[in-house]
Amino acid sequence: MNFDFNENQTMFRDMVRDFARQEIAPIAHEMDVKGEMPDSLVQKMRDQGFFGLSFPEQYGGLGVDTITYALVVEELARISAGVCIMVTVHNSVGLYPVSMFGSEETKQEYLPRMAAGEIAAFCVSEAGAGSDAASLQATARKEGQEYILDGSKMWVTNGTRAAFFVVLARTPGGEGHRGIHAFLVPRDSDGLSVAKKEDKMGLRASDTCVIDFDGVRVPAKNRLGEEGDGFRIGMTALDGGRIGVSFQALGIGRACLEAAVKYGLVREQFGKPIARQPVIGNMIADMGTELDAARLLGYRAAWLKDQGRKYTREAAMAKVFATEAAGRAADAAVQIHGGYGYVKEYDVERYYRDVRVTRIYEGTSEIQRLVIARELLRELG
Ligand SMILES: Cc1cc2nc3c(=O)[nH]c(=O)nc-3n(C[C@H](O)[C@H](O)[C@H](O)COP(=O)(O)OP(=O)(O)OC[C@H]3O[C@@H](n4cnc5c(N)ncnc54)[C@H](O)[C@@H]3O)c2cc1C
Image (cartoon, rainbow, N blue to C red; front, side, top):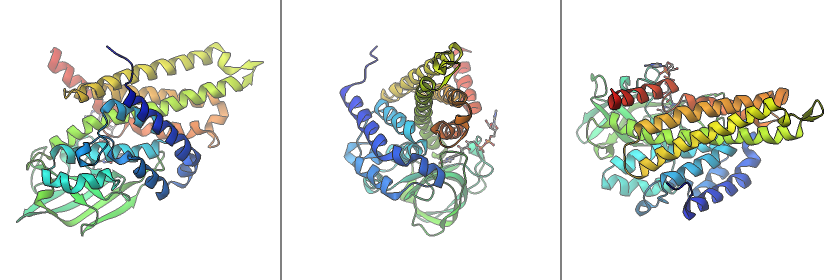
């Protein structure tokens, strides 16, 4: 077993760390307050190749392995989780279904554009279909060589920016996970519109939208996989996405730990830095230990993915542990800052809000535990 990163992994991590410090950190607070991300930053990220990270070089991507991807995600989230989620949704649940399940023609046509920074979004959730994604109601009616999409998708990350939407919809009248198909839908399709942009608690730099599909015509060649493969495609993409969310949470958690240590060493009460008080020291020790344990779970899931092995259980374990550990770290960081942790002048206030959603999206903690239990019962029962 080798715990060292290779040269390529270290190089990417350092490159992203520098970029995040120089280009994102100075505006992270402002993006949170305004609830928006400047196009100029997105363009700089395009220029750096952030949108082609994890898919094949033959289609214009950088083809990095999942460990490298995890390092990149952690560095971005450490500075701005809102910027990070734009990149991770694009690279994982946005691109992965196309690169894994698209026809060669679809890949040739769209992947180079996506790698160059035409952003992708993932449309599964609906008002009535969240954890139970198989209950989705959006329909795809086949007419000749086209499908006609109708329905409304909620919580679409990158909704206002995306050039492409991966959409799950079912044959009218169908039920359950059978009869669900996946499509790649260009933004300029007639009948596709942004119905609402959500006003969120955290990740405010990122846009989360309701997207309406009103008689949207999609060529049959834009279907990903075979008819009825949609649910499997969505769930496979989410397995990978969960590794990304684990490292997103870890990035926020690390920012919390660093802020807590820094503040704890300068803030003096009772004649000495509060970090030197054993109770605060214990909090810092727990933060560091839990985040490291979570990181190892995440690396294992990433490594399994790179080996082409099954990693559903390991990704779920990493996600539930990392997001909950990061949540505890954010809580401790605010506590260590005392009243100063409760105001926007200090970044821990933002981290506390940003980290909360990592326990909700791409499968809630409760759903991760269902997945883990199902896998363990199957293996050990
Ligand atoms: C900021 C943000 C961005 C998002 N981005 C996207 C995106 O890009 N694309 C997309 O498709 N979706 C996206 N989502 C949606 C997200 O994946 C869902 O919110 C999530 O899956 C939970 O669904 P829900 O909100 O409908 O909650 P529900 O499924 O209604 O769950 C409510 C509560 O019930 C619990 N629960 C449900 N079923 C069970 C069960 N069987 N056992 C125990 N507990 C259960 C849940 O764990 C949760 O605590 C995003 C959400 C947010 C907030």
